[in-house]
Each structure stands twice: as structure tokens, then as C-alpha cells.
Image (tube, rainbow over all chains, first blue to last red):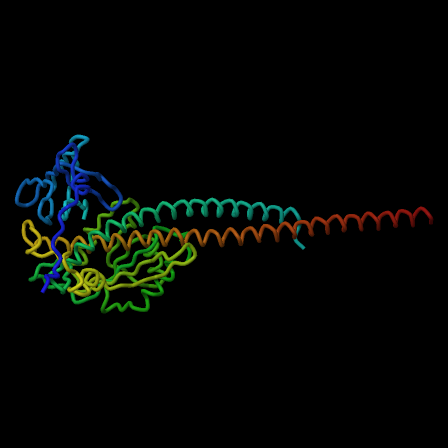
Length: 104
Length: 288
């Protein structure tokens, strides 16, 4: 009997190309509050601080959910480093996309 | 019949009312566009957070972020979101009427947001326990409100909902119901790979702490969204009231102008009659 279970598809070349910049892998990042988008675009990494301590999120990170403590979010993007000061936020990482919900 | 000068003065006053209502109508129209746009932007944010909350929810009993050993007051807190001041049409009156249907002094405490609500409650001889100004800025800090809510077993919110420019409705919801229903995944089999569990996610510091934080966040966002909705409904109601007032004042000006013309004509006719009668008398005297 043929195995009807779908095999996980590998990322297409176009998808891989879309998730790199100058050959370096990137991750989609969005940092926003109800009325303000602080950053939206691709980045090489995003660094923040939670109860456990400082940490970095790199491309292809595992699904991740955490509360952030007051800190400076540091985004390394193709355009340079961006620093966003936050007081209260929630970080959600899934499918090579990081969303930081500020002021929640 | 009134004197033309008197009518003319009244017409001038009515024209001022037309200008005033027209200006207020324009301001309300601009505020609607601005507020509506903000509500749409914020809804996108809220939806995304709610979507995560829906997938992570671990406890069906919503408890307002209270610790397990905290015992709340055995009363229901009624929260009213009203306008900052007058000139907001009949929307606050409708809200107070709906609130009065539910209010029982022995079972409820009252929290009012917006100064107009306190005035309306005083007129209805109801004492309120807490008061907050209606927030005007984009960022709303609802933490002081949440601290009060945590003391109560139940909380019910009365707010104004924008349907269209000509239609706004009053809504009342149990806050625990609305937050629980938003957090409840309707059918777990449909959640599939989106389910946020310890198997599929890394939580820091742990899943319970994140779920508890999200519960508080959702409550905070829900209240903020009700306030945004109410603000939009209030400016729409003001626009409607100002449009109606402008129409009425234009009709009033037209009627006063007609009355002025009649009075003026009447005055001219009277003077003419008096002149004719004087002339007749003069002629009659000359012939004699």
C-alpha cells in the first residue's frame, strides 16, 4: 500500500533566496504597538532580554514565545543596527518570523 | 406680529448657530476619519495577539490575573465608558438607560470612564465608586482600572459600538466571558500545527507564566479596544447630532427670514395705509 502521508517539502530556491541578503540568512522581523510600527523588515538577528537573561534570535530559530523585560531591542539589519527601547513586550517566533508586540 | 428688527436680530443669532454647528460637524467628520483609521490599525495588532492567545490557552477559568489565594468582593463591578463632555448626541443617555436596567445598589459597584457619565449618573441619582478621565492619547494605560477589577468577582462593561456614521449601538458584555470566548479554541482538531504547546514551542520562563501574562495582556487589550470603539462611536454620534442641529438651524433661519420679510412688508403696508388715510383727510379738509 502506498504511503499517502505527505512528505515535508523542502524550501524552494526562491524561498531560500528570499530569506537571504548578500548570501547571509535573514529572518523577518516586525516590532509594533497598536498604533506604531517600530520596525518591519528582514534582519540578520534580534537581541533582547527576558527574565532568564539576554538572548539572540537568529534565522531558522525554533518556535519561541516569551515575555520581555524593559530593555533595548537590538536588530542587526542589512541597513545597519537598529535599537528600540521597550518597557513591556511579548516576543513570538515562528516560521522564520519574529513579531514583538510592544506595550501588551 | 413681532417687529422686523427683533426678527432680524433673532435671524442673526440663528445664522451663528448654523456656522457653529457646521464647524463642529466638520471637526467631528475629521475626528471620525482619524479615529476610524486608528481603530483599524489597532484591530490588526489585537487580532494577531488574540490568535496566539487562542492557541496557547491552558486554563478555561478566566481569573483576571488574580493569584489563587485572593478572594474577590462578592459584587459585580459595572464599568461605563462615556464621553468626555457634552455635545455627543444621545449616545450617553442611551448607555445610562441600559445601565439602569441592570443596576442594583446592593449587588453592584460602579466605575465611570468619562466625565459626561458622572453628570448623567448624578441626574439619575446613582453614586459611583470610581472615576477615570476618558483617555485622549493613543496609548492607554489601563493598569489602574485592572487593579480595581481584580478586587471583584465579576465585571461588566457598558460601551458604545460604532456600526456606521448614522448608527451606533450600546453594548454590555461580561469581561470574563468575552476574554474566555476569545481565548477558547472552538475545535481543537482544527487548530492542527498552529497549536502552541510545550512540544512545539520553547517558553521562557515557562508555559504557565507566559499564559498568565497573556491573559493579563488580553484583558488589557480588550479594555483598550472597548475604549477605542467608544471614542469612535462618540465622535460619530456627535457628527450625527451636529448634522441634525445644522439642518434644524438652517430651517429656523429660513423661517425667520420669511417672517422678517412678512413683518417688513406689513410695516410698509401699514405706513402706506396711514399715509393714504392722512392724504384723504388732507384732501377732505381742503375741499371743505
